[in-house]
Amino acid sequence: MSERLLIMRHGEAGPGSPDAARELTARGQGEVERMANRLAGRDDLDGLRLVASPYVRAQQTAEAVAAALDIAHERLPIVTPDDPPEAVVDWLLERTGQGPVMLVSHMPLVGALTGLLVEGRAERGLGFPTAAVAELEADVWAAGCARLLHFTAPADLV
View: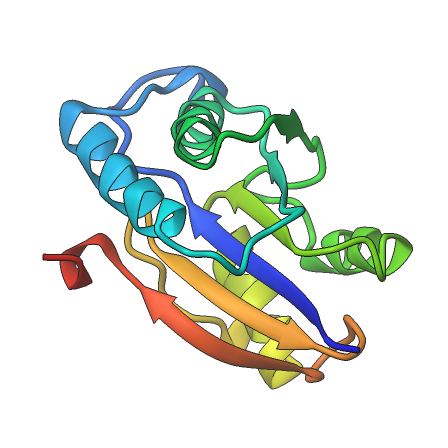
């Protein structure tokens, strides 16, 4: 039975230091709300587990998605910008068979993870605009074993 994974980049964030404390801009909030509303209109995400980077902008993004879907979200410390995608693959393997997962993270991790799972190479990943979502499906979470089902950016939502 195939597994489903949604990978979302946080909304646009303002400048600042430290990086982990950067917050969403008003534009970023709007992007996230549009994407969250799109996800809320779906009926195939029952049992979705929503996890996000502990960075403020990812937590703000996850909070908006969680509110739209009426679910909780969790912090996952291994999905910050420079974490290795292989660690996320190992985490996914540990929870096989537990339902769909959505993770909210950052570039370059979201692109590298998508590249690793779909193309077998992290450097072949997609460029993610802010608040974009890639939806993958796989029978097993391993390099090159996933299929990219959809890729939606906020600009695609009218």
